[in-house]
Image (tube, rainbow, N blue to C red):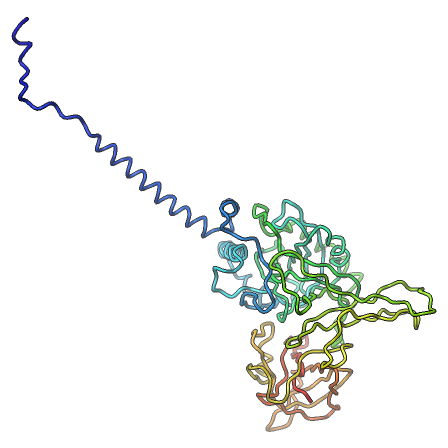
Length: 477
């Protein structure tokens, strides 16, 4: 064999193998990129739970809770806005601004308002039902009803009020949520949070409202109740608003026809003008559950008197209200007209507090002179400027007044200038007195200072330019 075949020198080092450093570098960079993408993705998912896909992911990993019920005193702090204020604020928004606002409103709702420091917008005012329909499995909330309401004070504003409830409550709700029945949203106990805003084709603004207290409702001045409860699951894919533009247009035509037959009338007295759908408070002493239905509200039971025939089998309904500072609920019976004398004897399920005046009328807590809760005292002129937006803290009306009329538990006052003694005819103060109090005589003068003012409940300006300030007497006489 040739010697050339043995030229390999054993003293020379063996050739080195490639360590693939470039491939490892690329692989590590890819892992870093993947980790960074997952980090950003998790921030996006947790930061935008209002999006359907993100909401479902958070549900699967149990990082988001269903909507919960808020107690009246623990509801999120908010801005209580009248229909006029709502329209004036949001009608100026561009399409992009409304989109961003809706995203934030829905985001704060699905997270139970834990991750927001902004004031929650609440709708207040009087609305009349134009139409109502059932919620289905394709809607944002899958069980219950939605009612379309038209503002009585500012018809350019519509609400779609959501009433989530069990299927067993729907029949009772359908009997009450009918065209023409009013819905009253008060800042004192109604927490109708706005979760979506829509601009309707005819220039109106439509607001989706959800009651954060999920309470029971009754027809004040009528018969019937139903209860709502927080939805166990949200079908976010259904989107908002629930009521489509076509449905709204049909509802407005239906409501217009209804108004031709039943024209709206201005109330001439402080008494309720018609049956109203009102919220029923939970009886005191019963723990309010975070989910599910509230305990059943007791109602009066008709009891036939001995020896008398039961020619009228109707029941006498009651309205149960929880009063501030009172340890027991007060049950008020609503009389049923045209019953034969001696046929029925109303039975009140809840016994009123013995320290309270008669429950057959206006009942609320009163205070000794100088003992009013801390608040701010304003003049009639300052109060008139609060139309449509009374702050949540107590506001008291001070000044010198003259009584111009009285009827029942009500009196009408006019503010009077201290220097001239001339009454201001552009401002009317309507005072509501509790049972056991006697309204002052017509022509009497009233002086109220910072520690004895009337509690302001509502401020409205009429078509004639006159401002009506509704107040309550809280000071014991």
